[in-house]
Image (tube, rainbow, N blue to C red; front, side, top):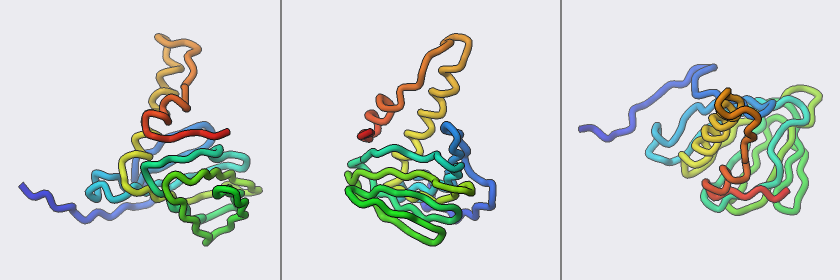
Length: 156
């Protein structure tokens, strides 16, 4: 049995897509593609969408702004990010971001090691679909409880 990682070419539109609120997240590569090294996610965020202040002690993140403009909190610092800007967030560091428009933002998010962030997003997306099912009418998704399972803590 060959355990070697096979080369893969990802085309635009390739990947597992999730809708979380107004955001669209496409996971281009996950831990299964690269021996758990990292996860690569393309996030599309309309103005006034993003992630609230949170931290996670189990993985680092790198944000690469491709399109749009973002307001980014990195620990105590507030940053205004434009296309081409890159921010590294070491594990455990409080951070948040918001697309501030006027156009839709697009960023690449690299989390390392892989497998944690994508599993969290998959569970949140699944629970959002389940909460709208006839068997669970009106059930709300508890993001904080799901986040806690993956070592994440929302601070706001």
